[in-house]
Image (cartoon, rainbow, N blue to C red; front, side, top):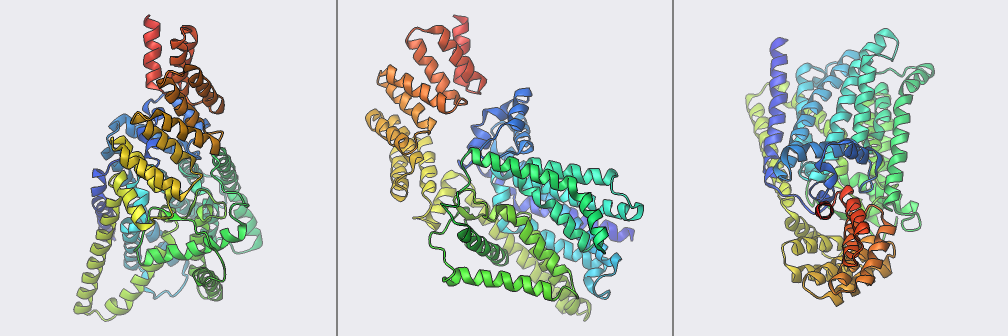
Length: 590
């Protein structure tokens, strides 16, 4: 027993190490200008650990999200590594390796519960300790090395995925221990319950996708724990979960408010409910297919325009989902596993499946980080069953050798594919070039962001070409007009820049950045009154626009109104603008 335990520990640690090593190339990756700017390298808020930072992290909506623990993790990284992307990637890698380790342990312990409860065929190989370990290792290998998870690990901004998953998994692990105590003591308020609840709160503070955990715990109560044996017991167990559901509802409400504040939620007029259901059902099946055959993975899957049940590509997924659900129900009396796993997969995807549509993507690989555990567990069980039939029964050395070689080759192949996908996130140019090649006509913001990357490297002509393309693909793309205005301004074409900013404002009259940028252009051609009005309007629209305060301060200074300039510089500094801090200090010295 001791020897088996040591072997298990060694294997689990080795698997986590392999996962870390496979993701090692990501440490050479740069930040990308897709949210990494907002999360890290242009985020002044994470640069100091003080009361103001915690107030911002916990009481402000940022980038249509509320996940204060994620912000704290980025602030810790900044305190240790500054803006060296290696350190930020390293944290993601370590978290993913730890998650992989926990996945293996969780699967082994869940199968241990199955064995103790005496469910299923007692002669099944996966109910032995060796079988449980092989199932756990297989599941862990897929979780740790599958390329569908690259997006969650190699993208610094997706820290929230790996951090949320860590506490989600720890909560389930704690719940396993709680159930053993609760069943014996017949009470639910104890240390393990509090640990389960505490880890759940930390998961919610990392990413609101954890709202599904209470439902997952109920599934576990049904299978494999078999705690739900009557309607009376079900009521008791549901009462036990009420604090969890209350936190889920609170987190969901806060998340909806955060997304509405940034106008990130699509209205029913824009995308009808029936369209959302059809596209979401297709996504359920598409994720399974990508887990089975990880090809044509794309960091961005644009939302389809022509959605109809008359189309075979939408009708087939619906029939498959219905067929899988019916099959799980039909075999329910003989085996609860299938319905439990299928329910886990569907429920964990519900917050991001698209019924409440956020953004303009139809699906995203990062959404599968936790849901993929269901399908991967099935593969793990299937692998164990196959080994039990082929290897353990026949005890053939040749068959055993072939099986080991095939397994090693598959691991190498999957790892190689993962390595390729990690390379896509090398830098902004590599990322957007890849997406543009995949979808040259359907992702205008890929041209916008590549144009921004060109602009930062001084390649203004190429930047403007990309902005032009973005506008061709999306004529009302006010952000593209704004960026093209910046590009024209940097080449000295202030007249064209003002035209572009004015066009952006005409499309979106509440776009404060365009007012601020047009104000800068006016200021540079000495039209200070027009500049002042634009800066004033930008502040009216967004009282947290630090740059607009600083710019207005310079206009006040130009007009000789020093006391107002000081106030604006001070306000800009308080909002994190370093130029404002410098100007404020300079004026105080004078």
